[in-house]
Amino acid sequence: MLSYCKKSLGIALWFVFLTFPFMVVRVNTLKDIVEWRWLNMLWVAIGAFLLALAWQLARSRQAGGDRSEASGAAETTRGLGRRLLADPQLYRPLLGLLAAAALSFPWLVDTYQANIMVLALIFVVLGLGLNITVGLAGLLDLGYVAFFAVGAYTYALVNQQTGLGFWACLPLGGLAGCFFGVLLGFPILRLRGDYLAIVTLGFGSIAKIVIENWEAVTGGAQGIANIPRPGLFGLEMSIDAVTTYTYYLMIGMVLFTIFVTNRLKDSRIGRAWMALREDEIACVAMGIDMARTKLSAYALGAFWAGLVGVIFAARNTYINPNSFTFMESAIVLSIVVLGGMGSIVGVIIAALVLILLPEYLRAFSEYRMLIFGAVMVLMMIFRPQGLISNQRRSYQRPAAAGEGGND
Image 1 (cartoon, rainbow, N blue to C red):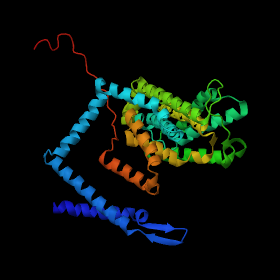
Image 2 (cartoon, rainbow, N blue to C red; image 1 turned 90 degrees about the horizontal axis):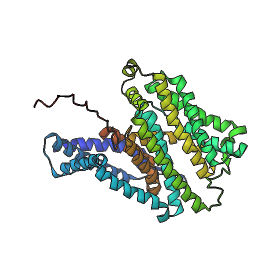
Image 3 (cartoon, rainbow, N blue to C red; image 1 turned 135 degrees about the vertical axis):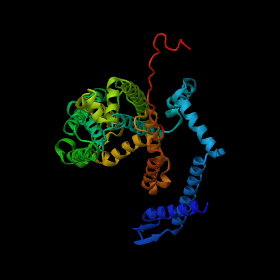
C-alpha cells in the first residue's frame, strides 16, 4: 500500500507540474496583474493522487486474480456492450428508441439546440469520411479540412456565378472534394508514417493560404456571404423551419453515409484497404494494386467532406478561411481515434461527445483544451483501440462432406 501511495504521489506531483501554467497562473489583462490560483493546484494534486491510487489498486487486484465486486461489474458492463452490438434482439429495440428520439428532437428543443445538433451531425459525417482514409486504409491525413473547404467554396462560388441551387451543387461539392482527394493522393503514393503526416498537413495549410490570398475568386479573408440555405421546392421558410429542415437533411445524410461506409467495409475494396493498413508490403505481395487502393481511399474520404462542406456553407450562409483551420482537422482526427479506428458506432459517439460537450459545458471553456488533451492522453494510455473497437469479421470454412460424421 505504501509503494502505491509513493507512486501516486509522484504521479500527482508530475501532473501538477504539467498543468501549473494553465491551472495556477492567470494573467489579468484588465488590471495588468498576474493572479496565482494556488487552490486550483491543491485540487489538481488531490484529484490526480486519488485517481492514480484507485487505478493502481484496481490493476493490482486484476493481476492478482482477486475478483472484487467492482471489477466484476466492469466485466459485466463490457459483456453487455458486446452483446448489445452483436445481438439483434437487443440492438433493434435500442435503434428504434434512438430513431424516435432523433425524429422528435427538433420539436422538443429550441432552434439553437437544433442548430448545434446539425453541426454535430456534420462532424459525424466528417468523422465517417475520414474513417475511410485513416481507420480503414491506415493513411494518416492531417489536412482533411481542405476537402471540407473545397465543398463549401464550390457551392458558394457556383451559386454566385451560375445561380445553381443547393441540390444541384450538393453532388458538385462531393465531386470537387473527390477530385482534390485524387490530386493529393498521386504525389504521396509511396509515403507513409511521419512523411505522410507532414505532406497532408502542408496540403491543408496550402489550401487555407490559397483561399485567403485569392481574393478575386474566394473573397479573401472577408469570405463569401449571402449563401442560400437549403431549399424545398421553392417554399419560403422561416429560420426555425429551415433549421428543422436542415436537421432532417443531416439525419438522412448520416444514415446514407453509414449505409455506404458499412457496405464498403465488406466489399472487395474495403478488404484491400484493411490489408493495406495491416501490412503494405504483404498487401502488394498478394497482388493488390497499391496505387488504386490508396487513391480510392483518399477520393472516397474526400467525397464525404466535400458533400457536407456544401451543407455547412448552406447552414451558415457565410464562409471564410477561419472556418477551415488545422483545429478542425485535429478535431475530426480526434473523433476517429477516440471512437475507434474503423468503428462506425464509435466514430458517431465520439463526434457527438466532442462537439456537443463543449457547447453544454461552456462554464469550463477556459479549461477546454486542457481537458481535451488530458482525455486524449488517457485514451492513448488506457484504451488505444478507442471507445468501441472495430470488430473483425470472422469466417468459418464449411465442413467437408463426411467430415464430422465419423464421431
